[in-house]
Figure 1: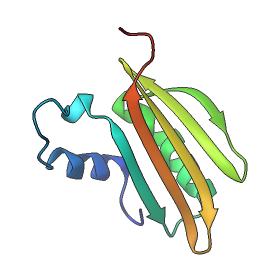
Figure 2 (figure 1 turned 60 degrees about the vertical axis):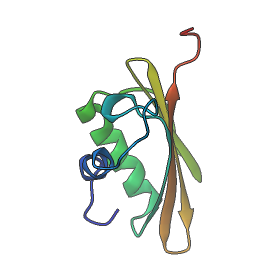
Figure 3 (figure 1 turned 60 degrees about the horizontal axis):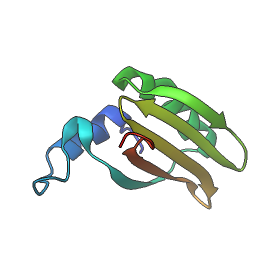
Length: 102
């Protein structure tokens, strides 16, 4: 994530081809894995500050050795799991439909 922000990542994802029915742009779901040279606290702070810039609303946060940020946007939920590793940090972002919509 060195020098790459959430908006850069999203811009790159928009250029991927998705089969019909997989969602696109505002409706995609799945998991993304990141490895960063940044400290886990810096990654946590970055996402906490910048996720609202793209319309995500923070609904829960926990900052410990393994940190979590949980966001909601429209009918989707995003869970960020951020932890330390030997050379910085690693993060998983899982995005899926909010429960109880059917």
